[in-house]
Image (cartoon, rainbow, N blue to C red; front, side, top):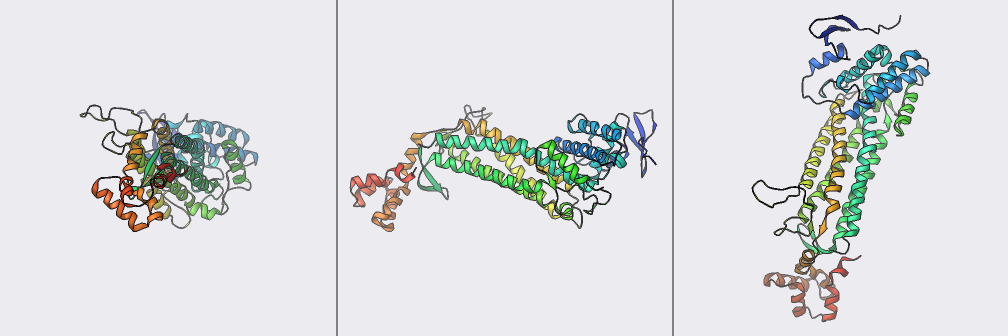
Length: 462
């Protein structure tokens, strides 16, 4: 018997229509493309107003379109029905039907409500049955985690990684530009030995470069798709060749090397790959926090702080103190990083909350990971363009700090011994004089040799 493609059972005069599902009739807004199951979820979950991001809805459209295409090729769906579903799925993927994806993130933990939202919208547009045709060979339990992986991989490749690479390149250029500036290093927030400002910035560039590698490593697991496992990983009702064909089609359309999960039971019962990706994003947020805080401190002042660098002025900093300019680009960076670290805590907890054959925390995991990717991409670009690119050095101030540093005595220790060098440092501090001045009087080192030893450029290296 052909599936009933018309769930509509009557029109009402108050702007609603009646639709039916297995639980009975539901009033649905007359202009809505979704049906009874979506409407039940609308009424059941009036929680936060948060919706799945565009990247996730696009992934659902890609999956549903690819599924229809492969089902037709394998003879599991009439060609004309599959063609209509594909056309409707394209409209979903391109964002044309976003207004009809109305469900809250805090819903059924499998994301079944959102999978049915997609099935009903596509079914309405394509005049196809949402379960029997749009959802053929699929389950919410393999579609939703597949959509998480597809959307995260696409967002990372198209937005996050290019933004990270831009920041890394900007920091590397700045490191070269600032190479000749000698400054004092700091450990424990105390003066250490001299270094080059460019060396400090090269460390920041390396942090970002290593973070890129960690994200790419995490994406290896994201490229494995659970599609084909259906309800619990056994593949019940998924016909032979379906999963392989759909995953190949998704890889073709996105240019990302997606592959079928090696073990469907792991792929559906756990969300370890998503937790690992979130951890890589959190690690990058931690790195950006360190870099941002350093930049704030190095630019503190302008007259009563460290002031070794000058940050670009972007806007007035105070409603009461005229002329004050604050490091607002860095502050926005730090807030975004704090948010990402919070998202990761949620994702980690959700990953641990899987029970038996299914994790039922997937919608919020999807939302938080995609939000983290978007935030980190945007803040990386903004930090690179509006802060790092415009940083300048106050060379005179940086070099003056070097001369005042008590840690200059470090280079004297091999010549006169640690204890005598320490005594010179302590006396210099107590008297308010420099190590150079005290060493002339107390070290017994010849002036020429002392000048060689206390040359900051020699100490900083190349």
